[in-house]
Length: 473
Image 1 (tube, rainbow, N blue to C red):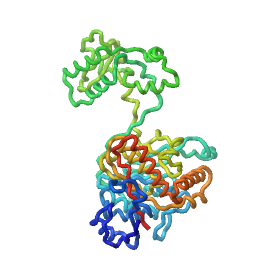
Image 2: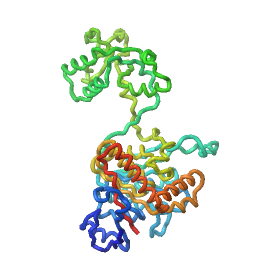
Image 3: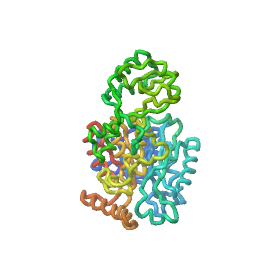
């Protein structure tokens, strides 16, 4: 590894000669270099790990990635009273003056349709909102998402007589300019089964159900379509769900999973006076218990054929359980699990420097797609890089990540910590000793990327699990 002054016109392997010249205009009196011995697949990867003060890293990216980043996610220090490890030459060393210039630089890196997510807690939510309104524009505020981050147990319950225990944190969500909406909505499965879903459909297969869904999503249907669907449903028979459970002898401890796994062939019926008028005009199909037709608005609906035709609002309409077991998380993400295995995600036991993978993959999945760049300039233990690789493995995309992390000393953090956090840092230090690495969070983050990359590769061989390491001093 050799140190190269930024002023020199040098062709770097990670950016090319033209951009290297531009970098000379950006960084002055800073030494930066690529460390190939520290990265993974350095010659073919497009992922970057920048080691140094993040304000320098953001300046480094101004000429190479200006307007190219689709999503920024950061989990900055929450200003709980401890000293900051992020320092610059500003006269004020408070939290707001630390955040403001970094967000200004981050905005320039975002594409016009880019978005930024910032995790924060109650301490600086108000100040962060004001800063973001100024930097990104109040009109570009999208959401303040509340995320359940802990359970009502442990030390936090000690003072429950004086104040409500803290269970949530927030994510401020801003767009750069032209946010075109979510790529998809990452819905979550509800945990409690709706007991109104109490009819089991014998002879309903997953293949038939998939075909029914395809027809329901069509813009227009003709009578031939209706006839074909009714042929698919001809041999489907209704039975009591409770009797089916008894017949199959489903154990109680397996019942909930079985219900959700079989939601495609479990239904409930609901009343509908408008649909009964439509169905009453239709001759009852012989020996068929479930049928379909078009409403007066030409919308496909399913109904039971043996409903009470004399009732004012008969329970005739069929609702499949699989249509309602997944929910839009909206702006309160209560389904994120933050206990147990999360402390070990990525093979690194450092809970205090992590965000749940499920949280990050949801943000990535909802707002990015093929070839998009995701930036995290408070990288911590590397959770965002891990999440990008994980999501790429799940949907076969080719997103890239850029992580920036200062060389924060774990030894210093250990001195000023206590309780569970102190134990976690101790475990992290022992792990770094085992692999003969210095006691810095950057080393922890890079090791996590190496370990999680191997895990991801076992699921999907095509994922880019590499990263180049750029060091700024």
